[in-house]
Image (tube, rainbow, N blue to C red):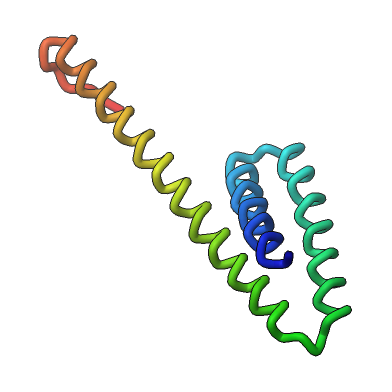
Length: 103
């Protein structure tokens, strides 16, 4: 179970990072509450099973997969945004008779 919780938590942390960097105050607060509740569950589960190192390992593997998956997803999103921006800029250059565009 902690394997999937690890994946979920890293997705939540990635979302938290995005909303904080965009200064979305309310959203960052809501995501923080969700993350703390997940962390509370994780700590409780690990403490209840402190002698079972496999639980911690499964959680760590879930966290690793969640981090890698969400990073990969946002990498694709950012590449798509850059490609769309570049295409729009090229279209504007062509429509302006090949004049340069100042940013």
